Amino acid sequence: MEVIKYRFQQHGDERGQLVALEEMRDIPFEIKRVYYMYDTVDGVRRGYHAHRCLEQILIPIHGTCKIHLDNGSETAEVLLDKPYEGLYIANNMWREMYDFSEDAVLMVLASEYYDENDYIRDYDKFLAFVKEENKDK
Image (cartoon, rainbow, N blue to C red; front, side):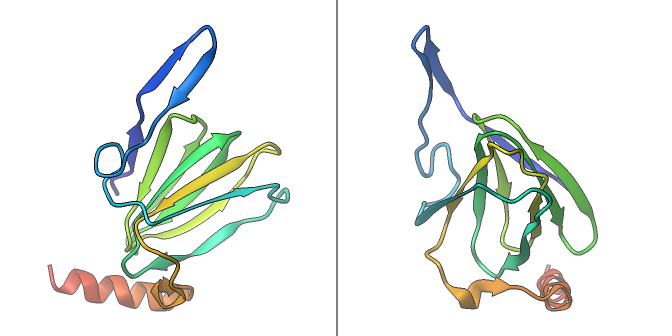
């Protein structure tokens, strides 16, 4: 499984650091939604879903967390620990976020507006979706 991370350009001096993100330049899609998670309870896993269409970039603005990725045939565990790196997650990828540090803030940039119908929340349905999607390739 290919894990895709984007390393964003940092601008900084003695005053601190700045990262600027632009859709279709730094982010490979038009950004239609931004949200973030924080104060995640110790030991909790989040996510447990995939999407039919939506793409995402996950950026650990503060602290660290791990992401479990599953494409239906392979899995990967990815550590997010740099505020200038973002993890790309395609639509056809099951994801779970876990092992959040106490100070973690995880920002998500999404290619689509929220649509409950785009979510696949049942793992067996996800496997069927991926199988059907790969059949056409």
